[in-house]
Length: 182
Image 1: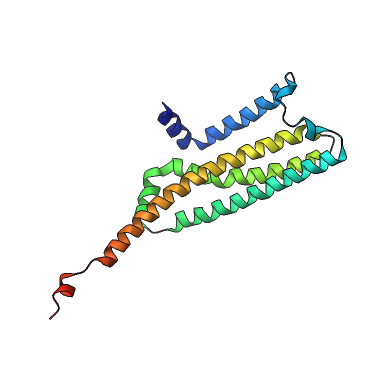
Image 2: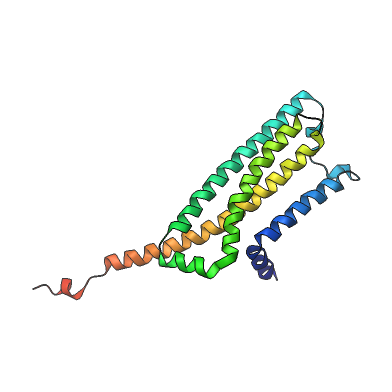
């Protein structure tokens, strides 16, 4: 059962993203009747120190998300630009789900960056109540994109490892002419 869920989630990154947005929205809505579910109560206070702390947290997270988005871009360029037969085969076999995953691993950390900046701006306005939920959505987007990035990176490392093993084996092979030199 777990494998079915894992495969379903791997092949449908957009559906997972929408589900995560709905989960954050549901969490936000549930905090009105159930205040104890709100982990951000202190960040929503009118206290200047708490506002500054929240802005710092939101912008720090936005910076981390930007770094992840940059790393994802580098990995994506490597995967797309490689002429390795194994990587070509992987790209071909994975098809459309892989292309969707590439989009998510770039788009979601960027979304996390933008949501962190938007949360910081919103924290300093009268819309302060929405800032933590923008932040939470940014964190969720960052984590989702990062997990997909790590999954893709793990696959790429395995493929490159297989290529390296084959190249090393070929480098170490000795031809009959080298053995029986005259």
